[in-house]
Image 1 (tube, rainbow, N blue to C red):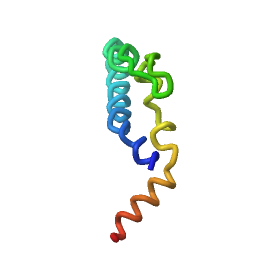
Image 2: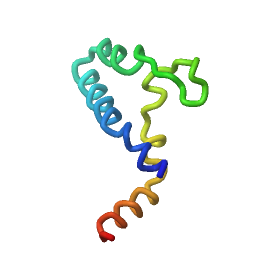
Image 3: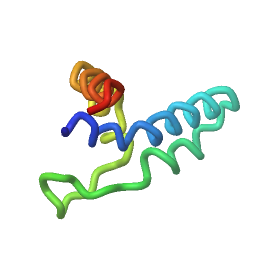
Image 4: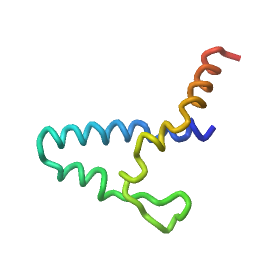
Length: 80
């Protein structure tokens, strides 16, 4: 299920939100830029292109299929 595969980015999304809150609290955004903007990853569809991490980690891309995820978890909870 692609919906469950998309959840791989959830821990990094939480980490990015925590880093953003810490940067806003301290009013020092340099570490946030170093964590979210400067690192780049390969694009899935165009492997030669590198895009910033912040472009991939957003709530919509990770939990866009919430109904499918809930159905899969309910199925696992019921057992075979």
